[in-house]
Image: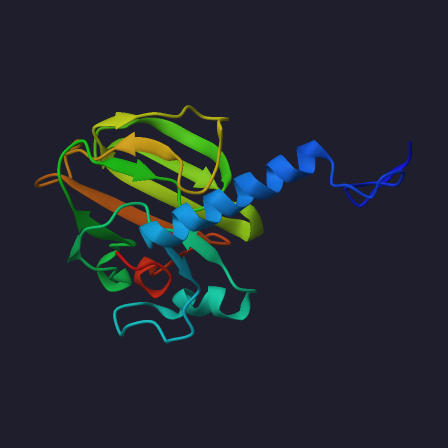
Length: 183
């Protein structure tokens, strides 16, 4: 029995495993579309507060990023004051999700920014999530886009209430998350 392209060459029927993958894929796509928690790379120019490195991802292929959480931007990206991310207000213990598939490269507590998790993604992209109440993944964990990784918190010296400080880094340079993700 030679199998080719998911077809059984003797009967021409889809293999049961391929049917299951197709159905699971369709269900996942429908769920993501209904949640409206995804964003395709923007073609608009970064805000005035973004530095020149914010345009680095503009020349890359389309990037699909999941929203780590919905909320109100309470502090925008501003490289001039070394605020290399955005602060998103939310309810304590709200679930924080990975913006793309990747590997956790840091998962620990720091005195300044509390519980922090950082994820390495393909193409030189790193996402960083700070001030969490609890971390759900350890260094070395492989995560999927939209997978819960932490709970929103108010930890560390550099916080003034429950919020997510979220950063995106491309090839070692900070980029403005608001250019790529709707919060």
